[in-house]
Amino acid sequence: MDKFQRIRLGLLCAKIKLGNVFTRDEDNKFREEEHPRDEETGEFREKDSTGSNAHAKIITSARGANKFTKYGFMNRNKEKAHEKHLKEFEGLTMDQYIASGMELVQMAVGGDILGHKDKDEIITRYNVKTNEFVKGRPDRGMYTFFKPINGKTYYDEMKMEDLAHGGRD
View 1 (cartoon, rainbow, N blue to C red):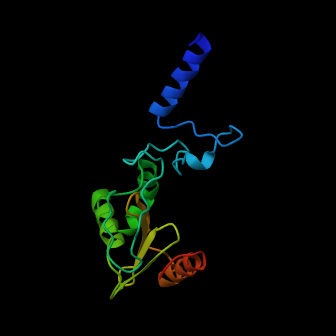
View 2 (cartoon, rainbow, N blue to C red; view 1 turned 180 degrees about the vertical axis):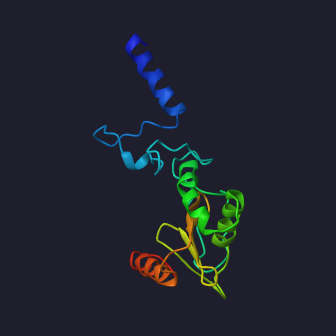
View 3 (cartoon, helix red, strand yellow; view 1 turned 90 degrees about the vertical axis):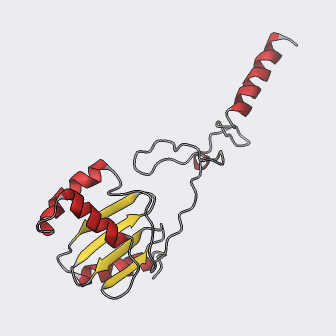
């Protein structure tokens, strides 16, 4: 085996060891769709336990209770941005505000609680009695939590928009 063949064999072994991280198509071009990126940061996601880059599909219930694995807002920047809404929840600390939003977003629909999900499995809940609106996804946490000025009208508009784009009631 000459030097060129040894190098080629070494590169092939490295590629196999890395699990074909450098996936190329027939024209030896990088295929972006095979290397999903984090929606927020744009960085490549880590591989999951199956060795693929694709994360497990999140299945949520439009009307039932949903168990969130991520507690609080999706990141520190979202939490900071929502400090302005804290004053809408008179007497609550930031921890109590977050706990209240998490409780609502995980609730089943019924009574004063309205809800649906959008095409991306993002849960929306609205409490008619307290005028509280929250959106979140179980694997990412809350996106938003506030008291809309237009109350139920705001919720109804958001619901119509989400359902028009593939959401479920």
